[in-house]
Length: 265
Length: 265
Image (tube, rainbow over all chains, first blue to last red; front, side):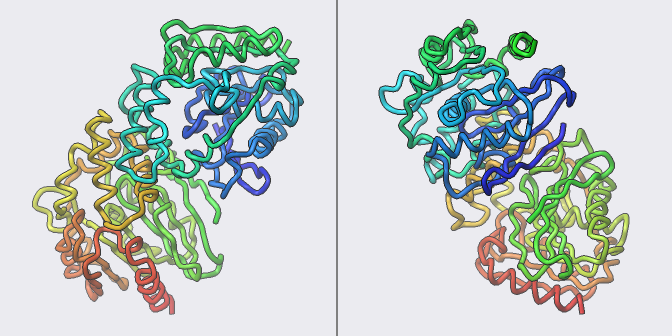
C-alpha cells in the first residue's frame, strides 16, 4: 500500500494504491464525508482508492463541491494517473461523482462501472437520488457548524448505516466525517442533478449492487440506475444496509472480482 | 508545506514541514489523540510537526504506546531527519514524549525545550502528571470502544479544553481524536513514569508555558517541570486554558519566536 498525491487542477488528491502493478485496475470512489480508507479491494486487483476533495488525506479545496465539471475533472485526474482502462466503483455519493464524470467524458478510460448503494442524481424528485429514512433523519443536522447538533447526527448516521459494525469502526468513520469541514458537507448536497441521459448513454458493462435494507440510499435509486444503463446487472444484497462491502466483505469481493475478470477479458 | 513519511523502527511517521529550509528548526509534538495539524509555527521558523504513532497521518503501530524507549526512538527519528539541532516543543502528552526522549538520549540534538500545557510524568501521585477537572471528568470514558460512551466524553474534552474555539475547529479536533483507535488512546495512559531525574539533568534553555485556567493539565504540572529543569523560564498565560497556541496564537508565536532566536544565536 502506498499513498500518492495527485494534482487535480490545483488541489492535491490522495490516492491509496494497493495490489500488483499489472493487475486489472479498479478506481474506488467513496461516499459523502468518508474516505478511501473504507475500501479493502481484493489483493488480485490493482486498487486506486481516491480521497475526494475535502475528504481524508486530500486537500480541502476552497470550492468546487457543487460543480459537476469539478467532480468530473477530479475523477479524470485519477484515471489519467492510472493510465489504462479501469473499472470505477462508486459508493453512495461516489456514484454521483461517476455520473458527473460520464456527463463530461463519457466512458473514456472506463472498462466497466460498479455502483454500490449509490446515488446518480441529486435533488427533490430525482429518482436516482432517493434517500432513505436514516439520511432523512440526520440531514440537515449533520452539516451544522455546532458540534452539539452535528455530532449526534453524524454518530447516528455512521452507526446505523450498516448495523453490526464494531464500535471502533464506527468511531473511525465518525472521525473521518467530522474532519470534513461542515461547509463542505453542506455544499455537496446543494446541487440539483439529472442524470437520465448520462445513464442511458453508458456503453460499458455495469454492475449495480444495493442492499435491500439500505436506509441511507433507497434501493429504488439503484433500481433506477440499473433500469436506465443498457445491459446493467442489478445484484440485490438481501437484508444488507448501506455498506455491502463492510457488511458482506467476502461476497462483495467475489462479485467485484468476477465482474472485473469479465470486463478485463 | 509538505508531508514527509519517516521510517521509525518499522512504523511510518508523518511529519508536516513548513517554512524556509535554512531557518531555525522547531520540532512540534502534539498531545494525546491529536495530530501535528494543531500547530501553526511562525513562518520565520522551519517547522517539523510530527504525527505521533497511531495518530493523524502516521501509521497505527501494533504497540509501543506504553514504552518510554519507543516514544524516545520515534522522536529521535524526527530529530535525525531534521539533521541539525532543533528546539522541541511539546504540548500536553507531547511533553511526556520529550521526557521519554531525554531519558534515553539526554539533550542530544536539542538546542532548547518548550513545554506547553504539558505533562512530563504520568501515574498516581506524580506531580508532573497532575491532571485537571476536565481530564478527570472524561477519562476513562474517552477510551471506550462504545461510541455511545466515547463520543460524548471526547466531545466535551475537545470543546472545553480551550473555551472559545469555533465549532468547526472543535469538530475537526474531535474527528482527529476519534480516528485514534480506542485501544491506543487507552494504552497511552497505562504507564507509570517518574521524570524527576530526567528533568534535573536538562542542560539546554527551557521555556514552560502554561495557561492558568488549564483544566486538562493542572498548572502545578508545569510549575513542577519549571522548578526541576535548571534555569527554566515559566511563562503563565493568565486566564488561558489548555491550548495557548490556539487561544492566544500571536502571543504564543511571539514567545516561541523570541525563545528560538535566543537559543539559536
